[in-house]
Image (cartoon, rainbow, N blue to C red; front, side, top):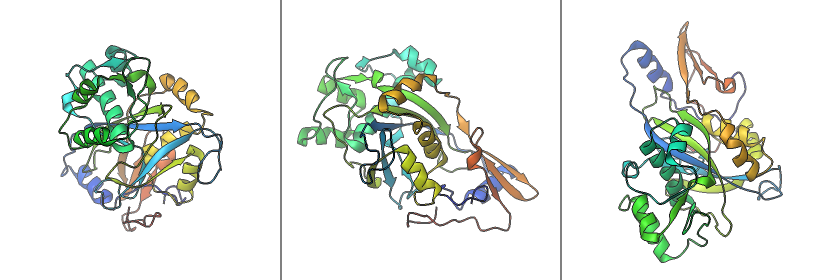
Length: 312
């Protein structure tokens, strides 16, 4: 329940106790791990493929398995943690320089390379879509086949670094196909914390998505408007960063428009704040008032998962 409105906001039952422990000084925040996620877009002309509703580009989303320790049952984008091996290894690179990306992402050049690599690698690992090509102005076409799958599996198992994968394939990473959209940091009271950069990208011509992730039990192409409508009705479970980025995407009429607007997006990190006022927990995300929650000290803190999975 947020501001008296039922919706699909992900809210772990252990948060109130952890917030109180943090306020009491008995909980030490864990250091967030660097991560990247990609909002993969395509223009369909009819919105959500399954319903024909909505307008604008569709975004590729996956539903995390309810057995997942973090955000089980929630809809999200393909993404994951940064591989430290991508910080300083030479990578075939096309598009804006590492220095440009460092300034845009608010990190050093090595960190910028690793974050961009994570965005492209995780998209390939979880959807089979690869934002790379043999030259700086081309993109690979078909990435199916036993040899491609063997490399993808090696990346997932961390037997192969992304730099080694690109070098083996004679490919360069197309950083110009990405647009930095937002940055969110998991709250200090969460046991699993991530400093996540959100990117947008258009589905390359000739490539198709598939559910290649072991962490997802469903994938869907859906317009941001339809996705947020499902969240507002309590039908789709999502985390605040997912909802906020979807609302921003809903204002774009096409994938190209989303990419064109990305350079003007504010990349100031968003970090939740928790206060205890007269025994009541007030949880808020600066600049995103819709996610504010008031949790009375006597109220049950475990909402049900509207997707039918485990408690959220």
